[in-house]
Amino acid sequence: MPTRHILSLTDIVAARSARRPILLSGGAVVTMDPGVPDLDAGDVLILGTRIVAVGPDLRTHPEHAAIAASALVVDTRGAIVSPGFVDSHRHAWETQLRRSIPDVNDLGEYVMSTLAGIAPSYTPHDMYVGTRLAALTALDSGITTMLDFSHNSRTSAHSDAAINALVDTGIRGVHASMGPHFGDWDHQWPADLERMVDAFHGSNDGLVTLRLAALSTDEIAGPAIAYGPELAAIARDLGMWTSIDAVFGPSSSAAILRWAEQGVLDDTLTLIHATGLARDAWAAMGDAGVTVSLAPTSDAQIGLETAIPAVDEALAVGIRPGLSIDVEVALASDMFTQMRALHAIQRMRAANHVYGTAETSSRIGTRDVLDFATLQGAKANALGDVTGSLTPGKAADILIVSADDINNMPLNDAIGTLVLGADARNIEAVLVAGNPRKWAGTLVGEDIDALRDEVVRSRDDITRRVVAL
Image: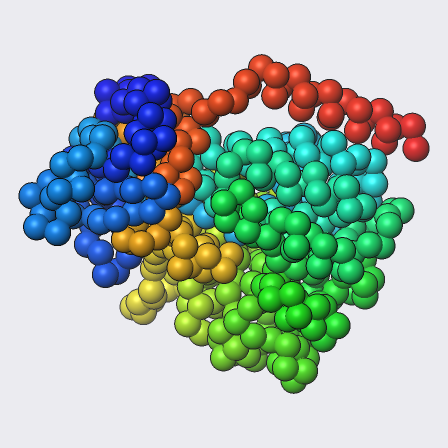
C-alpha cells in the first residue's frame, strides 16, 4: 500500500503530545456536511481532538493562516479525506464465531444456534475478546464509531468486560446493554444500568457512551427484554437513548403503534431493521422522530421478514437511516459492503418497479449511502453533534483513503470511489478524536499475532464448553 502521503507515526505522536496543530493538506475532501463544501483539493485543520477548519488553502486563510502555519503538515495529495464510518448496530461479542454459519437460512436458525446454543457458554473474558476483535476490525476498515448491541450481559462482569474492550481499542464506542435471550444469568439487568452509567458513561475522554438495548416484542425471548413503558422509564431516568432490535413484521408494527399510544415512542429510540412494517407504523415513527438503523446484508442474506432493507419506507416518512453490520457469524464486517449492498438493492428495486412501463422511480445515489454510513449513523447513535461529518468544532474522526491504489486510480469522483471502489486495504489512516488508530495502513499499537492467538484460544474454549453441555 502506498504510504507517500503519511508522515511517520512518531511525528504525529510528537505533534499531538506537544499540542501542535495537524494540517491534512492537498487531498480531495468529502465533508458530508451540507454547510461545508466538498473540495477537489483542500485542507482539514485539527487541533487536539477537534476539527478547527476545512477549506481550500488554510495557510492563506485570514482567520486560520497563523495556526495552519504552525501545524505539522500531512500531505494528502492523491488521497481522499472523509469522516469515519459509523456502525449503528453490531453484536460484537460474537466475533470469535465470525462466518461460522455463513449460509444461515433464517432468523430462527441464528437464534437457536448462536443465542440459545453458544451464548450461555461465554465467560467475561470471551466477551472481552470478541468485542475487542470487532472494534479493531471496525477501526481497520474505517469505522470510527461502533454501537455494540451487547445482548449477552449474563453478569455485571460480562458487561464490564465488553465495555473495557471498547475502551482499550480507542474506538468511539457505544455500549448498548441488554439481558441475554436464553440460559442462566444473574438477572442484574436492567437494574445494573445505573452502576454502568456511573462507572463508564463518558469514559476514555468521552469516547465511550452507554444506552439501553431491548427487543421490539416478547416473541423471541419473553417480556423481560421487550421494550415498553417500564424500560422507557429506566432509560428516561438515566438520560439514555434506547436501541430496539428485531423490529420487523406485523407484531412489531402493532408494538410501535402501542408505544405511540403509551407515549414511549420518541426521538430517543433507534429502531433496527424495520423490515415488513405497516404504513401506519412508519407514519408513527416519522411523526415521533425516531432514528432507524438498517442492516442491508442481514435483511437480504438472512431473510428478515420481507428481506428488503427498508430504505424507501424510511425516506418516505422523512427518516434518513443509519447503517449497521449486525452479526459477523454470517455477514461481512465492513461498511463498504453495507453501502454497496444497499445502493444496489434499492436501485434494483426502483428499476424493477417500473420495468416495462413509462413510470419513473426515485433511486438513491452514492452520496445518500455515504450519508447513511456517516452522519445519519452518528445521529442514530446520539452522536450527531459529535461526529459523522467534517464540521469545524466536531471531533476529528477522520479517514485518509488512498485514491492512487490500483483499484481506485484515477480519481474521478471522490464519493463514488469511497462507496463503490475503496476497501480496507486503501485506508491509510484512521483518526479517532485526532488520535491515530490506524497509520500507514497498519493498526497502531496492536500485536496482531498475539490477538490471533487469544481469539483462537477463546473460540476453542467456547466450543469445548458447548460440546460438554
